[in-house]
Length: 130
Image: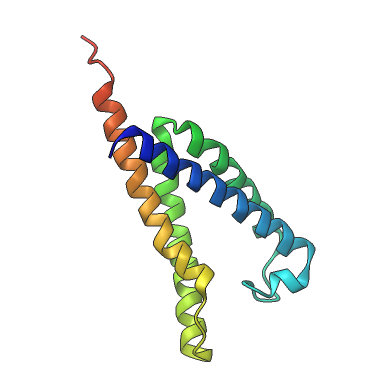
């Protein structure tokens, strides 16, 4: 993938991360917003953690330090497990589709792959040191 489409994709990732942070903030502030995605017992501290994570990702997706791929891999495991379980549970108990969770479960591994490809291409462009 050439540099220009990759840059656009990472801008979309950054905007999506910012929107996710905003959604967590809105859910923490308003029970009616929280009901869209979260159970009533969802703790406020988790919203705070994901506001910080998603806010950081919005910035990091634009800079893409080499190390970002590893913490994002851990985050991918967490969100695929959490959102994947939630989507399955909602389908199994209420026959409802949780579109937000499905989007997250599809997007996180795709972004992780994009980060790996970006890192590989960046490493290829860097001159080898003796």
